Length: 272
DNA sequence: GATAATGTTGGTCG
DNA sequence: ACGACCAACATTAT
Image (cartoon, rainbow, N blue to C red; front, side):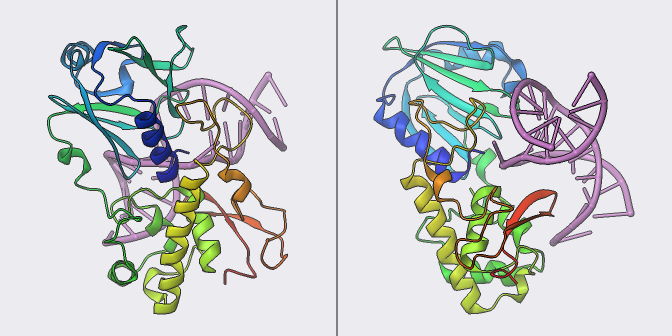
């Protein structure tokens, strides 16, 4: 669930919460496999005393630049950060105690998320594709990517090696907005369709960030940001999880199909 | 109460 | 190179 807009929201809220320039006083690992490397004991020993110099996002990764190392965190499906509180939550996997006394807790119900403490972030991030909200991501670059492959559009957009940060929600929304079917072959898109798709991708991601992310459902398992606030972008979704309801553009019933083993929501009238 | 489905990614196997 | 399938895991919906 945390896709680019959700991760971006977390980064911004961490900066606003003044985590920058604090140092890490203590680290505790409650679930070892949430840590990809190094070992829990090495991790705790190495990270203790390091200062948080920068907090950034690359694709769906959170990138913490520390004084000696870089901490990379991928939230996968259910990872989340919470500042404050004291009791250990049942889903809490790792905890950092900061120099001002505050606690940064990492919860991950399904345990898919991963932390990694590395010397150089590049070693992990090199395989990631272009940032879709960067100036380098133009219609021209998208068109070149589309023509370079011949595969279904949806798996292409979900592939982090090409464009970094899109997930199931924002891909369905972007495809609906651009009026293209998820099974269309990348190589078959016209220049005009590529332009619409480029606009749509940037639009849904920008809106998602403005709305501080998408929080589906009412449960705790769903996305909420560092502050505990839910996002509001779920109210803006046009097709995702809206199967059986009317397409907001043409009134046709939205259907759900499977594409690349992922639930996929489309309007068959709008997306041929 | 069993079974299916769930936002992500990485691996294997054709 | 690409897609189908599975695995990691816990919880909710059917």
